[in-house]
Length: 45
Image (cartoon, rainbow, N blue to C red; front, side, top):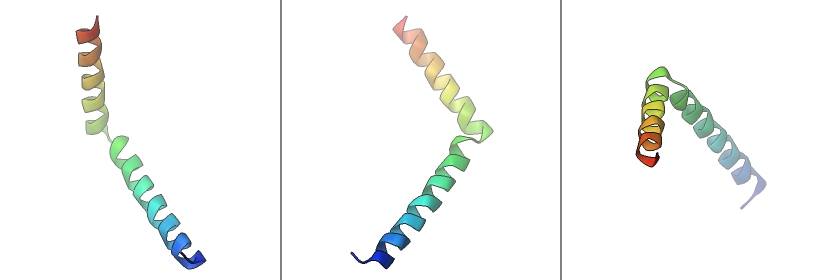
């Protein structure tokens, strides 16, 4: 791959990471993850 292709790939990866961060830090997703972790901890012990 050429340097330009690496640059485009890097920019796309950064954009995807920013979108994923925005989704994961939303209130609904945080509540869902907290509930999932709590359920897993209750099953384990």
